[in-house]
Length: 479
Image 1 (tube, one colour):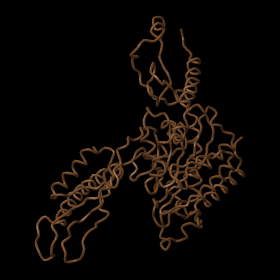
Image 2: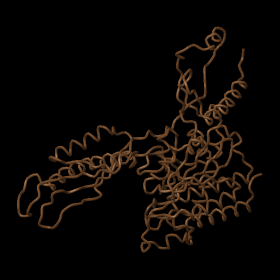
Image 3: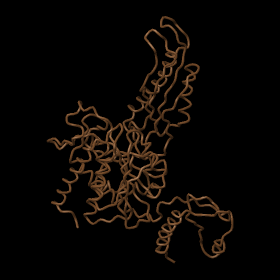
């Protein structure tokens, strides 16, 4: 039964109230105590009538997973991810207390995390609340995850979590995570990210008195290297300015973020150290770019060396074409809502990169348009109307992606010739036949000692055969 106008008004009020309560939890770095967030999420799960599981890969860094079981739970699931942590604030720079969740006369909600990204976490839950109230049942199971430490790299959160058995058991086939606000009518959608390199370049040199003209000094080496980086930076600025279709994620950014060294003003230092923040566009050959940096350091002078603070690998972007049925379902939903989307590469880093790195397609999408981009800024806010519209958008998206009828279960299959002989060869004399044992993540040990199969792999195989048999037995063939 459709939700009545009175019910919608009550749901809107409840959604805003829940959002404010979440924003008022100061889950701000450094040294976050996540207990208040977990208590809040337990209450939300209870109000939705859904189970919640708390796990962690690092003590004190909890991961909460609220699960809405689908009608066909053997199908791969949908993951809705958000992070609980927020960045620090400078309270004196804010109009209102940054954790007050104050709503002004225009309906703007001010608080750290309104855009990045407590809004999206609540929009997930409120969309589910409305779908359940409306009697909607989804085929696929939906897992809503709330993770720690995204704002400091996600190392003790999603980065480690995706490699655990706990994550693998979720059986995720498609994920949604944060995007970014858009100041125009068009919504920003992110299908990939630039990989992050943080280089600490050590430039040793001849020390001595400041009155001398020494050779091979640390300062000369720093000057040479910085000139090379800044020349490259100018090229990227020109490239971006020359093509209005490009966004920041389409170019490589380099920035000098730290300079260290020196003992006093009249002493030429024995070493200067510079730190470079580099975000590499997906089109860049990482090996060639690293060779270029090494060449600049070699040209700068002897004994220059690089310490890598962070060196992320290039992660393939999620495909936005017919090869990705979940994207097609997502796009169909947003088309039905007449939403304008601009697909782009995310200029920073989010937990999406860890999900993509284990082969799961992921889209970053925060349904926030007509709003200035204020993540990590003073006076971060979202308008109440924009926030509530985002819930309606996620209702539509969830129904589309979770009800997508991919009976293969998104399984990756590699056709090969069997190296030995099986009974299938006799069947093929009269009819087509396939040889298939649903045993992945398992050593090949047939005919060996200690032959085994993992219990979970075995049970997953049962689910796979349920899908295969129901599909094959219902195929209509004209003869």
